[in-house]
Image (cartoon, rainbow, N blue to C red; front, top):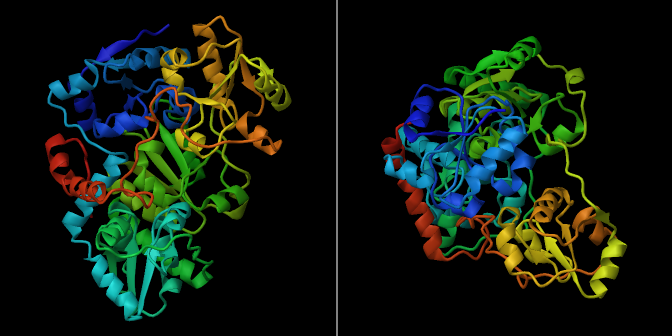
Length: 527
């Protein structure tokens, strides 16, 4: 059996500069990760390691380095990875403090490689932008203007520019000709902050569309800081496009991809890549989730192209790996690939596909290890137990889901912090564990039983089944056993963030280019 070694900052830096494959994994929860981490660290919390690692680090002999900030999580994660079949597992020497002491640059926030790259793109290409006040004046004057929101539809619905249309980033080049058929129409691209509006705007510029294009400077944050009102619950979405529009957009996108050095593969070439056991190859379908479910290439994972460019570290967590992109129109894959290539990835677009190749249907299913055994109880049995004394219910869903709704009396916990949670729980004659589906809770049940002699049970079907059975629910933060560190509160999401946090986030983004220069490992090359 392989053993865990240590790996130094200088070893990882050398491998990054040499473009070797590696996975640098921060196993803390998302909030502490977002406070400080290396540029190319991927966040896979110890709590969810078994649920995510097979898809994010698919090759079992990848050089993996795990770290924490002295919490003791990395050593546990390393042993779990070995048990899952990974053979080259190391712990970062000195953890996060060791990285800092060795002179390594540390970054705040999440999806930092993509956000730093966006800032670099704007700096190099002088991506056109308009201030919130200028865009408001155009809208007030009923000028010839269209506002396209490059975020996910759910983000757009939460808050958006009045009159804006939801067109997630990879869809822009495909659909802009029919959303702004008059070449004199001013096209405005927005997101919540800066990155997706910069990348979206520059995508349209790179594709050579005839319209004037500009990013909404600083997105909905800039809009709010200007004292202007956002809309909520808007539902304007793009429609299907004509064959002519699709063909023209495909030509534009192919030219951009060619300039960026994107590679071309057919099915045989993909098979050859996937057969190379010494390399990691990700296969992503960059169309909409609805299109993927209707029919997709077997073995591909759905990641809409705009989000892939925005959150590359989350989906392709092995830096130095190869990425193959799939669509059925020649636009979205080529445009997304053009950005990944500029971000230093070896990326190819899969050509020559026919309708018959999209033979699989349904939702994507993550790869999982063998599931631990657990004693299960039904909704009815749990409801009966909760009416009496002695049953302690633990919920391992995300804290946001828990606060929104949970089984009455349930205590929220983080799997990796079970020992701390136990100290804050009432005396129990039995524990019952749940989460949305009970999948994560199943792994937590195994951990909890190792810590206590008290019987541990799993709610069959999880809280989803409890809700489907019409059982009572409650909301709020009353029974938190540990702090809500599972998710970093992004200053650009939601509608109730302090103005100081919004401005601080913009100031942080402006400083990313200087951080990239100090770090020196990014390998970005802007067209």
